[in-house]
Length: 143
Image 1 (tube, rainbow, N blue to C red):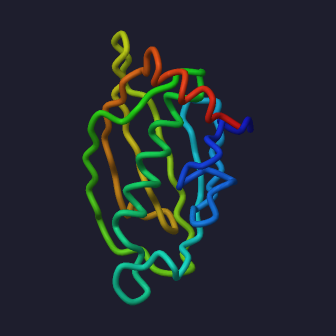
Image 2 (cartoon, rainbow, N blue to C red; image 1 turned 60 degrees about the vertical axis):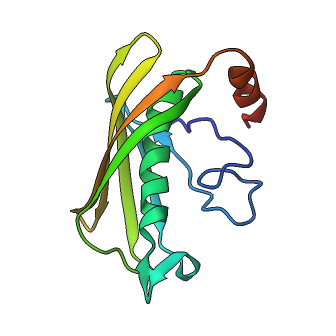
């Protein structure tokens, strides 16, 4: 499996972000991108339950990595997350993201999060290919 490029300071994947999740993302033969994350107590919202914003961040990242895997630098335009059930400390979340459609600079994606095979969250997203100064900034951030 080939690892997808990282942004060094990214909260989700950055190795240089001391507060971050440090998740690693890998390309699959079917074009999807996967990762997994073991829930840490420092990211709870309620007692022993992962904060929904962390799950949303992981879903956002796995979807944008599906765009980035081919070298396209993009940013999130919109995202919808559906939470199906709570995720608890020490559970391992397995996430998958894929591009559904690409029209010009616009990418439509979907993401899914599972614990023990059960869906705990889903997402759909729209990502826009970066241009100009923004694209240059993103390119400089790549590890």
